[in-house]
Image 1 (cartoon, helix red, strand yellow):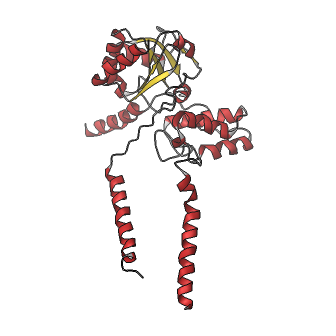
Image 2 (spheres, chains in turn orange, purple; image 1 turned 120 degrees about the vertical axis):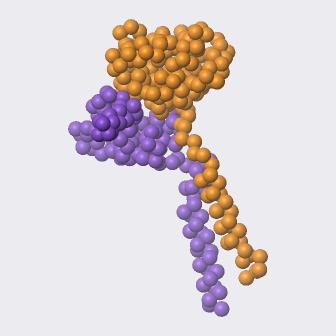
Image 3 (cartoon, one colour; image 1 turned 45 degrees about the vertical axis):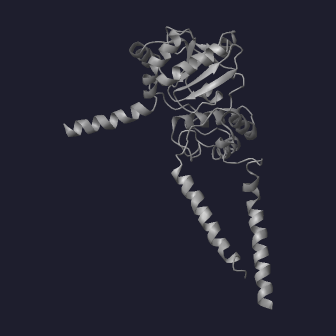
Length: 175
Length: 134
């Protein structure tokens, strides 16, 4: 056997070890991005989630105005942290609508009373069906939808204070 | 006091993580038609849970997995084919959500690896037999 060929297995082994070490050291990204970005919102009609606000249908999102669709729940702790940012976005003139996942009207009313209400409408998604149709895998998640009902952007997890300006800009650009 | 705090901690933790709605009707109830249930079960075992990543929705206790099982059973009962339901999910979450990877540009190596290893093995064996005969 050739002298050089003898070293091939060792080199391959070191390369494999390096690749595995890199895979272990690299932080694992567990976010699952929706493949619906660029597509039209799925067709849906949801009943009102509270007595005080109307429900939500896909037709409401194709009324010529861009919207921020917030998928949330009163039982979701990060959604409480997100509330002030949603208020800031609504105050900037962005229509914010909600999809409440597996929620109860009384619990939702308490949540809105305690954390403020940035929503124009909230649909009740009791079996997560519309959440799945959006390609969303948790709460909170937010989707920017343009006036024709096309999904432009997804935010996974709460919208944090540094993200507010970007979300408002995306919505304004969609006009 | 310690016992009271422990009881409170045990009570409060699940409340923070999950909703208090009961599971969807078909999340944990089999379909009446055993053939439909078998088709639904086979599909659920190859759909990945979005919450407990690495478990199938048939195995996962996450609420979203329950809602996904209910969705699968409802659609099978309504006459949809398992392949259509899988395609609906893949359109939303990518092929990540399926434990049955399609053959495409990123997965061809995965699918052809067994054949490649077999060819390499035959080559090594053939060479070593030839050497021994000499």
